[in-house]
Amino acid sequence: MRSYLDQLRAAGDLDVVTREVDPRFELAAVTARYQEAHDGALLFENVKGAALPVVTNVFGSRRRICAMIGADDLAFCPAWHRLTASVGGRGETVAVEPPPRREVKLSDLPHLTYFEKDAGPYITAGIFLARDPDTGVPNLSFHRSMHVSDDELRVRLGSTHDLCRYANAAEARGEPLDVAILIGAPPSVFLAACASIPPDADELAVAAAIEGGPLKVTPCETIDLSVPAETEIVIEGRILPGQLRPEGPFGEFMGIYVPEGDNHVFEVTRVTVREGAVYHGLVCGSPEDLIPLDTAIASKLYRHLTAVLPGILDVSCKPYLMNTVVKIDQQYEGHAKHVLLAAFGAHLDYSKTCMVVDPDVDIHDLNDVWWAFVTRGRADTRSLVIPDVPGFYRDPHKDHWGRLGIDATKPWGREAEFERKAIPGAAEIDLSDYLK
Ligand SMILES: Cc1cc2nc3c(=O)[nH]c(=O)nc-3n(C[C@H](O)[C@H](O)[C@H](O)COP(=O)(O)O)c2cc1C
Image (cartoon, rainbow, N blue to C red; front, side):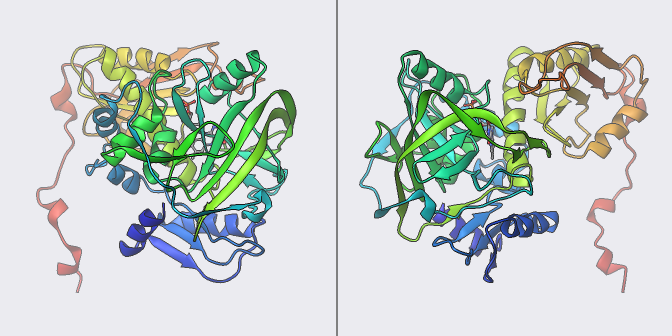
């Protein structure tokens, strides 16, 4: 990650805070205010009581995430699909000598507390690397982790996530699950960790595909895993079988607190940092959380939709993850309705609402999407309600049940009537030539 930060600095995409900030709330508050007006990374050089600097908002920019995979037209989904289409089975890794690392205690790392009612300090940008106990396939994913002591973290594993399946499989054998938590991994590993790919595919191979060559790895000392060698901070440990302890409350990505609950126990066996390491903090629910998640969810939907339907151009989850917007090139009457049906089956946790638009609509601007719906046809026949279907997995009161679909495309056969008007030359006008 450090060479990526150097690149961002050279490109003017990194700002630096030199004055001392408190790891309890102040660092998160400054990040949140910064994100209101900027999309650069923010480096805190002086965090009270912490030996390491902290960087936030490294991935809080759609422009940067698109650039990482060469999607210069800002159409992430098609580029991601091309990149990952050939990635299957087991990925290419190469074992290397690790750069100099030193062992530290968990309490030596910055302890960041983000939201008012959080139970305490949390690791929020930790990437969990584990292997499927049955198949050995490696998986990367994010799981927030509450600091408890030098030996213990408590982690919440989403029930539909691969890591939860791995932990259950290990527990069925009465065994702990070896896990390495990577903080400040190479950006390719961060992006691969966001991805939801089929369970038999290897997310380290996705990272290698992004890198354009084998991923350099080095073995852990206390667990049977190899980790990306350049990772700034590695926490080795195990998720214990048959043990759940209180974790939370925590200010989650939906903008509310998830209450305290009994969650998994992570036994820490070793913590190492590279010389000159930078700690990565991430404000949950901020652009650095939502933009990578948006691209991950949209890509999963795009993969499914393109497999079953023609004319799928791109997908976004604007203005929030639960809404899917699909851009299509209409091929037949009723095409958009087919897209709605397919989207509702493509990612059962999300797509609470789905909207389908024509190629001339900006799927990253919900004002434009609603403009299309209200100007391009009837409200009643172009909306579709599916009652009583379960939605997001953590939903004890069924608040996320049901689906709403909206066809905002032009009426079939009357496309010419809905051509957008344009003023010739307007796009090329430089106002400074006129306003003297
Ligand atoms: C930046 C970021 C942070 C995330 N934090 C969490 C988290 O704290 N807990 C969680 O269960 N999922 C979290 N997620 C969601 C999943 O870990 C993530 O989507 C992952 O890709 C799921 O992978 P899987 O398909 O291998 O299960 C986060 C995702 C992103 C992109």
